[in-house]
Amino acid sequence: MSSQLRKHIEKITSLTDEEFEFVFSHFHSKKLRKHQYLIEAGEYVENSYWVVSGFLKAYYVDASEKEHILSFAMEDWWITDYEAYITRTMSRIFVDSIEASEVLYISLDDREKLCNELHKMANFFREKVDMGYVGLQNRILTLLTTNAKERYDELLLKNPELFQRASKTLIASYLGVSRETLSRLNG
Amino acid sequence: MSSQLRKHIEKITSLTDEEFEFVFSHFHSKKLRKHQYLIEAGEYVENSYWVVSGFLKAYYVDASEKEHILSFAMEDWWITDYEAYITRTMSRIFVDSIEASEVLYISLDDREKLCNELHKMANFFREKVDMGYVGLQNRILTLLTTNAKERYDELLLKNPELFQRASKTLIASYLGVSRETLSRLNG
DNA sequence: CGCGCGATTGAGTAATTTCAAATCTAGTGG
DNA sequence: CCACTAGATTTGAAATTACTCAATCGCGCG
Picture 1 (cartoon, each protein chain N blue to C red):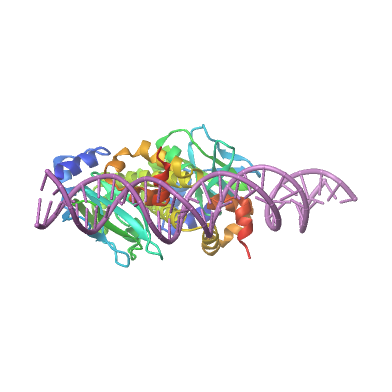
Picture 2 (cartoon, rainbow over the protein chains, first blue to last red):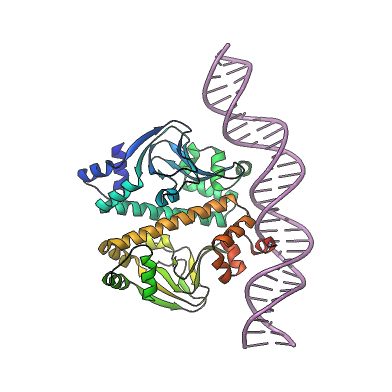
């Protein structure tokens, strides 16, 4: 579990044993059964979560109870309500486990301390946001330029793993399309 | 011009005169007349631009020549193709001036040097991406949950300045709606 | 005055949603 | 091993939303 995290971080920046020990001491771990909340709308968001194993979703629930998926997270992905986390405000979204999951998490205070004391980790997190920003920008571009069918094909091409684990209803909600429409695309 | 930049940075982190002098030495300036490109699709993106004055747009042009606005930028905003900039790859989008504009810009190398030598600036840029990330996430949420009318109203509420300077055609393109549809909403 | 651009309006069409019903599937208990 | 159920998926049909293409309007500028 700790070795997985180390591997994850060392994709971006290499660490000595002592450094990793120090990094790891800032994390805590949590196990979730299926359908358990990590974050609920209306609550403060203490932590950012890194997925050791399992599968989760972050979603907004609109006025008519409909879920809109902001992101999924599987092994090696981060998930939280980033806005609420970094601005210390209340969440507007929910995050819960689709499958039984295990996560490592770090509080904002600990993350800041860690970044101040270990410059490499500041770089690590900066690169994570940079890439996250790029990903969101590309998703916006897709939402602006493509129809249901094109979005589906693009996701299938870029994130085939998702189709292994997420129901079609969830995929539809991620793509911003009704499940019925999605169901009519295949063929 | 330099004092405006200093003010911009000091909204996030305060600087001594010497520090600002040092920061400012990493920037260059450029003046643009109306309809002049800052970035063109297919080219590398050396710089990130901060707007001193004027009004610009960043947009993708799709297969049928249609423009899709990714972002606007006016006084005090940053604009570039962030993906191409940080990954040193070729741009997929265009950035050009809607009005005559003046910008200050910094290359990626200079930005990295600056961040390494002045930790405060690393924080400054980190906070900028953080906020940018949050903004994009919220835009995705809007695209997923709202129709043309609701998007228009939300933008009018959150960014009234835009309606002063951007044509309705551009606003429509930013919202992901045809100009005719947008035109039919009002009233 | 007339040109040109942006905005609006109209009419027909295409894409997507909604609501409802039918079908399929995996897991459970008998 | 089979019947049964809950949930997910698909299908159907009608309604809605938004798009496209075309024509017209409105206004600022030379």
